[in-house]
Image (cartoon, rainbow, N blue to C red; front, side, top):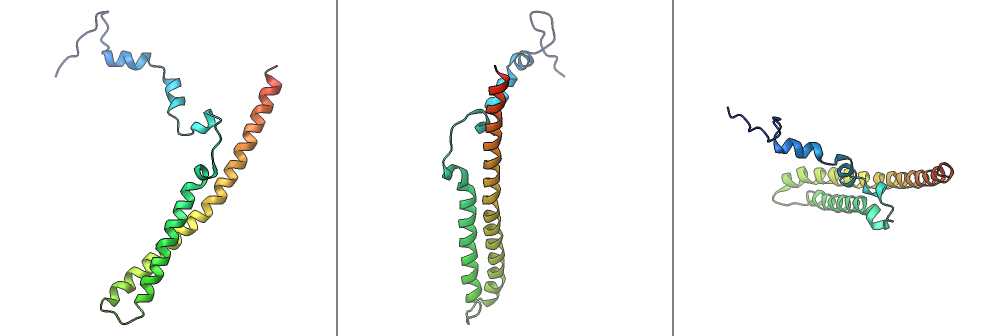
Length: 132
């Protein structure tokens, strides 16, 4: 077992632990937080807000339509009929699930945007009255 070297001031702390103690963690936390829109007041476009649910709806609709095609192929006399009967309904359900999740996601985002606007309005009112 190796003993870590002592620092020049006589303490047993390693240089890494000193760096950790002297770092400014509060500013690092604010910079690296996921909700940077809270800290910056830059306006976002509709695409920035709704691009994830639009992509989920598009992929879900494509998988759903592909499932319809595969399921309808099982009705005709084809060599691998059992494979189409298995994959068709699975793709139908997966596509429908993604389609519904994306369609439900859009009103949730709209509600959050309205709450965020109300919150910003209340913050400006609060700062107006209390910062006099």
